[in-house]
Image 1 (cartoon, rainbow over the protein chains, first blue to last red):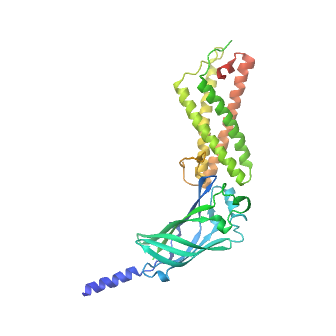
Image 2: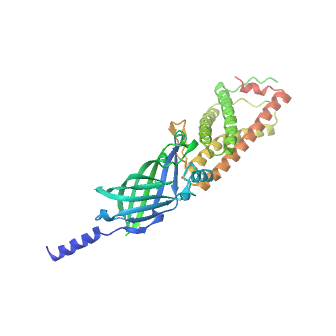
Amino acid sequence: MTRLNRVFAAALVLVASTAWSAGFVPDKSSLTFVGKQMGAPVEGRFRHFDGDIVFNPADLAHSHARIEVDLASIDLASDESESEIKGKSWFHVTAHPKAVFESTTIRALGGDRYEVKGRLMVKGITRELTLPLQVHRVGGLMVAEGSTVLRRTDFNVGEGVWADPDSVALEVRVNYKMTLKS
Amino acid sequence: MMQTQKYSSTAITLHWLIALLIAVAFVVGLYVADLELSPWKLKILTWHKWTGVTIFLLVLLRILWRLSHRPPEMPAGMTALMKKLANLTHLAIYLLMVAVPILGWLHSSAAGVSVVYLNLIPLPDLVGKDKALSHLFGELHENAAWVLVGLVGLHVAAALKHQLVDKDNLLNRMRW
């Protein structure tokens, strides 16, 4: 191995092992969702969430993510629907202000695709979850994004009269995009 | 004086169908605005939207028909000013019949709630989600609906005045 090659190899290892972590960029990250009411798509988002994320493609065993979502920061159709969804039948934010996702394992699927297994806790209920993730670099930033479908009733979200899937569908597509600095 | 000239049967059908649907949409709109959020409210709101889309489509048909068919002359006994006022009122009613559903559609789009007509045909969202904008469109939708209903009241009062005071049998033009 020539000297130059060794430097090159060292540089590659260095680049590959750069951990993209804690430098969570909130204004370039988003957490949106699309549900259905009476068969019509309804979109919304969470304005505030925080990520404690360490992502190193070369060391997935030590990579992990913990996302905390401030449920009261929900942006929905109207003031009326926002106050309804913060209420007891839905998120009950006074008792459960945050939804928390904590990863357990991250697996490479090849290319820029990964799979994150973890636990999602909403309204005091914890469930195992597998999230698909696509990771790409934009400038000096790393963007990890994907989407999954959650069943709101798995977390008792939308109880009582709202349990009827005909008025508000049980399935909610959640789109996540987390941007990190190295 | 007997009025012999009539609107075409297509115009007559559209006129009464639209009148009926506007009455329903208006009353239902007032009712739903005061309801507390519930599955029932979502249901009624959805039906209200479907009624509005139906009105919008029928009004477009009516406008096309009106542009391609000459309406009957106004009664000879009317002054030029009254004819002008009648025409202006009709024009304003047409404009509002188009504007009110579009404002409702904007209200829903800005709320982040898409409209899927009859649960079959997804309409495009006119604007992105913006809660404050949605609120504004909601107010405009409601106010424009009130103006429309006011003008319809004027329209009905004028028709009755022709029928009962002028006795020019104006209503016959809009009868099958």
